[in-house]
Image (cartoon, rainbow, N blue to C red):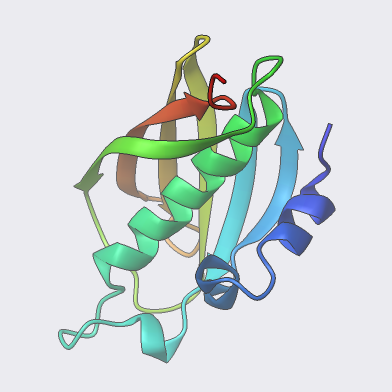
Amino acid sequence: MTTAREHNDLKKNTWVGELGIEIVSAEPGRVVGQIEVRPDFLAPNGFIHAAVIVSMADSLCGSGTVEALPEGATGHTTIELKANLLGTARSGKIRCEATMVHSGRTTQVWDAAAVSEASGKTIALFRCTQLILYPAAK
């Protein structure tokens, strides 16, 4: 099983890695991560940009998918996602927990909730479907 540290290492030198998402725990069916709100994450209105939250949630769900790939699978890709933005943050840490809802041979469905650590309020709910990839038939 991939450790949280290995997940963090896999993201180095990638766009998602540049966001500074830190996976703090990873276990089958559940991944928890956090991100520090930076000034460059803010939209012109002064609130964290939705794309930062969506990127973090999708990334954590993807890391969880890696943990749960069926035998013979070579990878995955997000094929659908939805986010409900319920609140916002201007500073501090955002903590996100991703949990597996469905694990099949061809798809996985994941939910994630992002919470502002300063307020304790849920600021986003997220759901995605991951397509499980296999080697091409010869």
